[in-house]
Image (cartoon, rainbow, N blue to C red; front, side):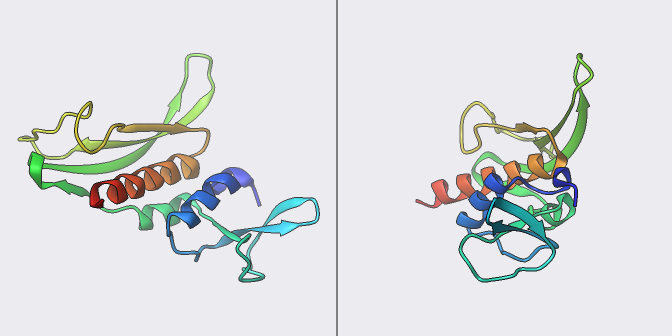
Length: 140
């Protein structure tokens, strides 16, 4: 399995700790030398984490986020970016999808709207982590 197709072990752990469901096609499983990817959830150990594919993250991410206090609806999307040095990076962004938006990304509930990572799965995972974190902070 190509590790570039799934979320990193570090991000997978953070998503597990944030409460994401631990059902996916692949899992990070501990071995004597570290961790490996497996298609089977070999144990219920706290050290086994879902290694999400980008498509699985697309199912976990909300279709849109409504910010009623700012009369704004946000939608997410991911995109591939080729840098000037020809390196490839993936982005995941939040954008307003209505014309009468009063939201300013520099203020308010969502402080970032573009997240970048070396893979699409990692970028989408960072967006999911970001949205969960902001939701928890706003509920307090």
